[in-house]
Length: 434
Image (cartoon, rainbow, N blue to C red; front, side, top):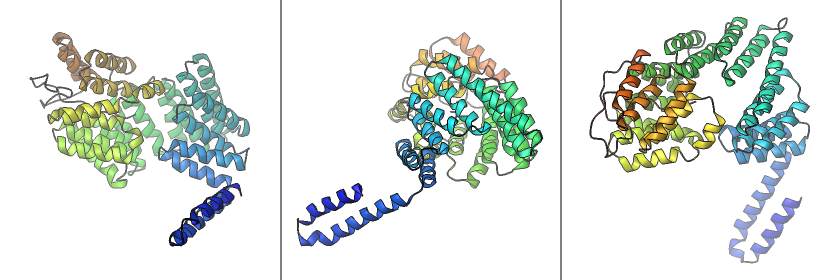
């Protein structure tokens, strides 16, 4: 009633301004009153669903408001507390996120639900530098995953598959990649119709271990189960592009976009492949579409766009794209300390800005995390050459070739600007998303 009273009081004051505006003001007042009534009619579940939708769109503050409304209506609604934790985490408010997840865990002790909140607590605590507490949180999440596996051994295959899949995700988060692959394989064995398990195996093989040919086999297994699995289509496109097989990569990205034209990660991958084939204007169009579809996570598409603009000699525009991509990058690296792709993309942007020493450090961090990361070795070769360390550049370039990269192109280098006059005999790399 307080909201209604305030709205009517405001209306009373405005209507003194004259009869000519009264009709429109009355309509505005009615709209305000209706919106207040509708808001009051929403249930806790309605507010939670609204929060989920806002969060998926990257509107974290509005999502937080919606979750708080849900909690006001039902203080024991565990899902709303969990959603609130995610919104706070995405806003960088980690202590508050942890408190929200603690409440969610207290209200819903189910192995899967509380386990996922312990996992997120582990991530938040790691960002805060509270590594011992983070390790204990991950340990508790793994205990709950094992409890679920034991619980569902005599239950349905779907539940057992989900339990193994959850454990695989936890192991992946902690950098235990071989163990994660084993868990995902057990998930697939429990439910042979689960295309996601093979997609997850492909992601680990490609993104974490640089085993691109093996990852292609895993993605193909996923696509045999579900030919329309967009994640597997995008993943196979990325693996093929990492091996320099850009024409084949484009076909997979296009298949994913036929299923969902708003799939931002596929647009970005398509931009990478087109750029590596020297189709710079077309690649910029793809990057712009990726940015449009996912503006809240545009960093990687901006880096790729900068590289394409560089190659077209549009240096000022390229510089702006690189600078924009790095605006919030420290937050990304803190959240993803074991993600080689995050470090690699940072190296690309820094190289584009001629900050070569910093770029080299970023590439080295990517290689430390994934020694078989072909594009990180190629990026390192380019920046070493820019620094005049040609012998080391040749070693890095040879390493990329030894790992399976095949290049038949010589095109301009990202970050060349007006300072580099020679064309480098290595094709540009991809800007990889997480």
